Image (cartoon, rainbow, N blue to C red; front, side):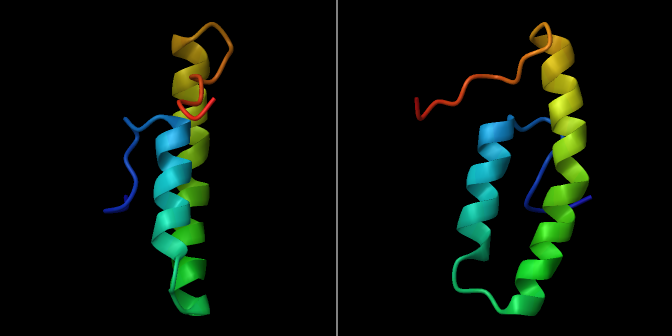
Length: 62
């Protein structure tokens, strides 16, 4: 998988890592990060929805 993202992250954690990772990167680097993010988000979402009765974990920024 990716060194940036992990299947054990929460959705808000992955989103935060994504936005931090793309800052200042070239378009080519951004596309690679987006590819890795798109691959991990469905896995995270499926796990979180299963663990939280159909809901994603709450966003700590709320």
